[in-house]
Amino acid sequence: MLQYVLHQLSGLDTNTIYLVLFFFAFIENVFPPSPSDVVVVVGASLIATTGVDFIPILIITSCGSALGFLLMYYVGYYFGEKIVRSGKLKFISEDALHKADAWFSLYGYWLILANRFLPGTRSVISFFSGVHNLRVLKTFLFALISATLWNIFIVFLGMELGENAKLIDYYLKTYSNIVVLITVLIGAGILIRVYWKKHKGRNAD
Image 1 (cartoon, rainbow, N blue to C red):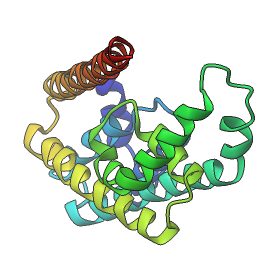
Image 2 (tube, one colour):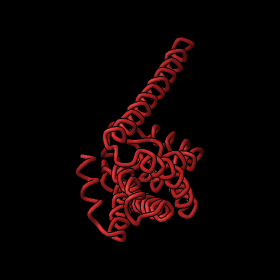
Image 3 (cartoon, one colour):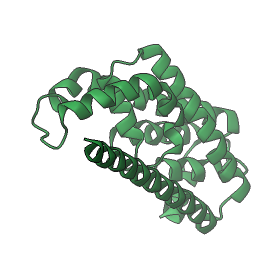
């Protein structure tokens, strides 16, 4: 797929390439999963052979990502209560919602700051940022910082690897697999800890 994306982008003029990169950066939060990282990396690989440049790519993709994050924030803000707190999702208890509220109130902005580095959870974090009514301006700022830091990495990756599509694909997949594994292990650890505390409490009674 990378070879195909590279071929398609290389045939476009500079402004159209920027527009395509903005579009894919924007829709990743709205329609996951989308190949936005792949497109941005491949777009960056064209810096040496086309008129595109590092700074415009970084600004355009970071703003696109932050605006996409903000759109899903508003989806969560206006519709999240009806979806999450309606009681229709039987597997989510009221107690679990209260705990999620408390955790998101404490760590919500840090989750936003880390969201671009957490594949598979980006749209979830943006949605629940709106559900938990985090401040709009601060949310956008943290989303923009997160996107900028991440895009510095992947744009630099594209510049360094050039048109070596197979190597780009390998690095992105390896990173994604490692992060998913760490996330699963952390989640399992939290579940085990909660179960152990409940079990200990019952024995104490």
